[in-house]
Length: 200
Image 1 (cartoon, helix red, strand yellow):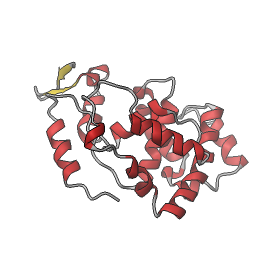
Image 2 (image 1 turned 60 degrees about the vertical axis):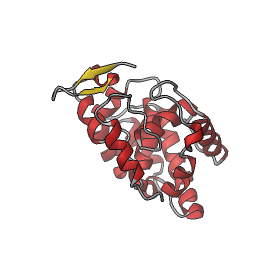
Image 3 (image 1 turned 30 degrees about the vertical axis):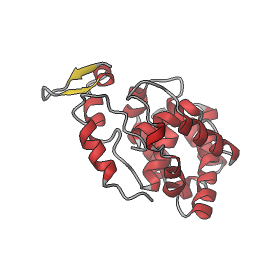
Image 4 (image 1 turned 30 degrees about the horizontal axis):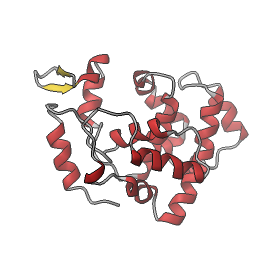
């Protein structure tokens, strides 16, 4: 699999070469395990917004998304009404896609239900962390049995705009799997973080 040389001369996952700002995102965020409900909900939403677009587009607008969606506090977003929807559709700082915006508003309500019944959104999502038997070579696939299962269960609960490929990208980025390429300087560091990570 492809590696690229980072600004410090060390190897990184090949996709970092697509944009200069990807190196920091790759090193500081991508693949590190996350148990914070707000961050998890944010990523679920942003991955859905990315559908059909580049991650660079979404990443460049992330602060605008955060401002528009109450910092991705899903309990706050669940209370958004028609005036908020109109505001979001008029906000040039985000992706003004009616279907994706409506999905976030819907999904915030579903997230509340999940947190109320399961204890937290994190506790629910981390149940889909694949075991060793399901491990696949890094960056070799775009879906997995675990991502298919997560997408299916969320859909059954009423979640929208979240298929198996989007679910897999979410699992990669939030540390439910370690998909850093073999030889990437961050792979061992993320593996160590996952080993010491207390599952919700």
